[in-house]
Image (cartoon, rainbow, N blue to C red):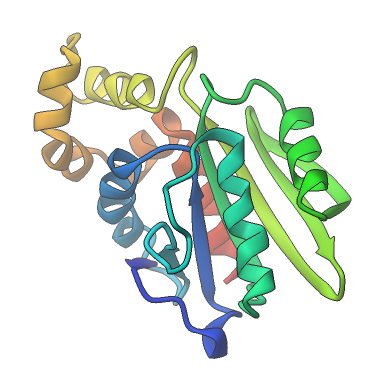
Length: 194
């Protein structure tokens, strides 16, 4: 698995757009994590910079990017929605927002705590959306701090974790990553379907 910035209509079956509820910190983390799931040819795609997206949407509003993909003919089979828990507290909020954008939820399954698989339909387009709420109370940084505590056996300040993120991810085993980071548990599930 790897991360790209180029979405191609002809490769929609293996490309997985990432819909982020926030910003660049998550993309930096996913760039480090994706190669750890190297058993497949799945390609995560950062769609934040696709024209004419305009401004970067945050929280639930970022799901509008998924609707835009369909409107523009990018009929991907899977997508990953990663959002901090400070923006979304429940699956119902996600379902309501998807409905606003014209998606019909045909099925939903809880894959793990705060990780869901939604079977969506919008017109003739069907896709699977992996929805992940990151963080315990606020954001994904809480999960990274947990991983750092596992790796180094001590508490670290946020600033130190940000500075050493590459080192932390590289030192962690795949098991440690999946235990600490919900997005890794979702990537494992996605990897099995590629």
